[in-house]
Amino acid sequence: MKIPIEFVVNGEPQALFVKPNHTLLDVLRDDLGLLGAKKGCGEGKCGTCTVIMDGKPVNSCLILAPRADGSDIITVEGLADGEPHPMQKAFVEQGAVQCGFCTPGMIMTACALLDEKSDPSEEEIRLALSGNLCRCTGYAKIVEAVQVCAQRIQQDKGA
Amino acid sequence: MRIKPFEYHAASDLREAVQMLSEEGADARALAGGTDLVLAMKHKAVLPKKVVSLHRITEMAAINTEGDEIKIGALATHSELAAHLELQKVVPILCQAVSLIGSWQIRNSATIGGNLAHASPAADSAAPLLALDATLVTTSPSGDENIPLASFFSGPGATILHPGQIIKEIIILRPQGRSSGRYLKLMRKRAVDLSQAGVAFQAELDPAGEKLAKVAIGLGGMAPTPIRAPEAEGMLEGLSCAEALKKIPSVARAVVAATSPIDDIRASAAYRKLVAEAFFKQAAQEVLTSLTAG
Picture 1 (tube, each protein chain N blue to C red):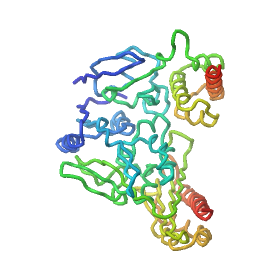
Picture 2: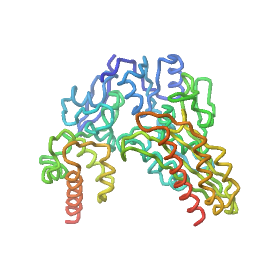
Picture 3: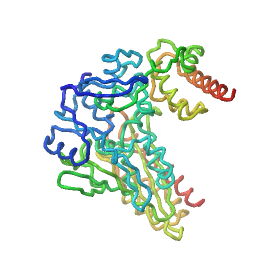
Picture 4: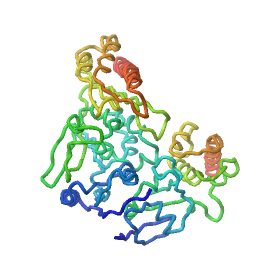
């Protein structure tokens, strides 16, 4: 039996009927066509399904679809505002993207980190991103991208 | 990894939740953060006919540190506990332990009640809560019942809860004297890893601040359930910190004697014992030194 849910995705209210045995990730990808969040391990280990739920990064593969009722979700599609989000730009410029499969999750976690702490140390960045696996980059460029983005946001605020 | 179909209901209050769970019996499961249950359902390790979500019962997520009884709602997430300023002051050992669970994403969903109810022998919240003499307030259609955490676990993945009975909140008595605690966890990597062994050491001084009034040692991943090491604790109680520091090596052997770990894919029993001994020494050293420094 499908369950009615109402929630907000990337600023747009959505009303859907979902199967309880689907996850939030299934709903985003299959029902809403938002293919940014990826299905990697499906077990909450790789982090590529990370979305922001009510202000916090979560593994959307472990959240049952009906639990999204009433929530506010941001996916990687919701970041760009006419032009790419500063975090997306920084990832591109620093070469923090190789195969790209982990990138949407990395960017969502990184954005959530900067929302919580505008000037994180390298250690704090690595700790925050430790639930996001990347098999290509070796992480160095990803950490640099987050640092660059943080600096830019700080400078823009100061300007 | 499809999840088998089931019936879902989001309970609007506690009474409705336990009523529904008890009607369905063993075929129903309570859903808290879901990071264990949804995974188990994906693996077909658990195949509930009905899932009752508790997330609308918002009072179950409250953390109240005002009185002598610190009350932690079962639905408080690990992130909320780790970041709670008053808990960091009063029971830092708990904040340390839950901040090591899973990843940031997992800690934002996973709850303390779920961590206990899942009853992993290595659950990171269990060893420190045992060391803090935590009591669980459970609720069922027949009313509330207080269960000391020490008698809650009945085996790996098993508790004494019956169908229709859920954890409502966790009570910790505020330490009366000056206290300190440390939790050390052995992991293969720094995140998203279950504990191979976890050692919690909590000590409290008498009102005069001279002798150890209470010493508690909680161990995770070292027996079929999380355990305490009462004989080792007894060797330290009543001593001054200076005396206790000298006894650490012999007490460490008593700690290991209390354990019965297994060989599994994460570590061998022999290695777990070595680690428990070393971690106990380190944790006790740090805690007793900090209490001495005052």
